[in-house]
Image (cartoon, rainbow, N blue to C red; front, side, top):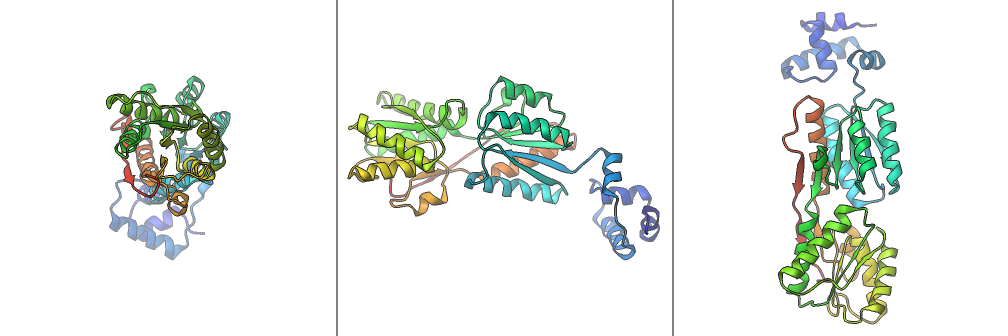
Length: 329
């Protein structure tokens, strides 16, 4: 069986150079990499991964924690970060919390036991216990979707407050005067609290009073339907509805239609996320497009910088959004 020494001799380089190529380390010229790879192929050299990991203390494993797998946002985000990690020779371990706060904490601890090099957490909340676990983690953690920058936790966030503000402006400019909001759990600062506060600020800025209501449900079409059905019975004057996600908006539109009303005519409806279901539903959902793949890519690049010993260029990266006009507004 060929050894590291054999590869170095055939390639005409030192054993340390072969080791750097095998470990995909920075600072090796492409021409040198090509010579070493050619020698590896000719000799059929195989690295001992276990020995290599023990020596370098690197596992090349990255833990990624998501709230649910069956989500367009999740799939786009994982696609984005996977491209970066693939190019860096890292392997992704994917864990789904099923939207359980406690499982976020459990997976951070589990990934540390598995000696992952870094963790990306798509968080659904941010509280004292989670922050403490992140700060105690031996592997660096990058947050996506929630802002941990106040605690020196690197974060990739969407501009949720401004989305709420823009939603308010869009509904007002379409003639709405009685506007309500359907959100999610209050513990979700980004999706519920910030988007509602943005809407509230837009109405106050235009001196249109307060939103009619701030209802809270879940991230499902059924929840949007049930919430809207109850709210429509309580607020007959509702003419504008901002939903925290497109799936909630799809459910709300169903409740509007059952009353013999037309979403987009009698009641304007806005969602967030540009979910593909919203584009094919009838009527199609007017929304805001978030660059979920860019969020994943940015989180991966930030984590790679941390792993290479480079200080984070900034503690928080805020991504912009795109307005999508369809039939409901």
